Structures are given as C-alpha cells and as structure tokens.
Length: 79
Image (cartoon, helix red, strand yellow):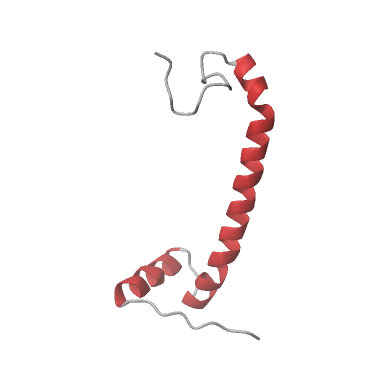
C-alpha cells in the first residue's frame, strides 16, 4: 500500500497531535482523513454555491429587503 512521509516542525506536529486527540483519533488516522474531508468539503461548497446561484432570483423576490439585488456587485452598498 502506498505511504507518504510528511515533515512537520515541532510546533506543527504538536498542533496536529492535539487536533487528532480532540477528535479521538490516532495521529495516523487523523492525517489520513484530512484530505478526504477536504475533498468532501469542497464538493459541498461547490454544490451549495451552485444551488444558491440557481435560487438567487427566488430569494431576491421573496426577501427584497434582505439581500442586495442580483445585479448589484457583492459587497457594494447602494449610495
């Protein structure tokens, strides 16, 4: 089975060990799960953004005072 050697500073390794302990996992299992969890998170975010964009007009119509209109740039307030 393929494996990977990863170099950490003492401080980084201590932080990773603490994070693993907080989740009740071994260091090996915790480091194994990290990229898989990140892949799932990115997939969720992509879906959420796609869903949000698909329903933006509905939201703007239902809650006109809650969000800037779709045509307005994000983060820019009307003068």
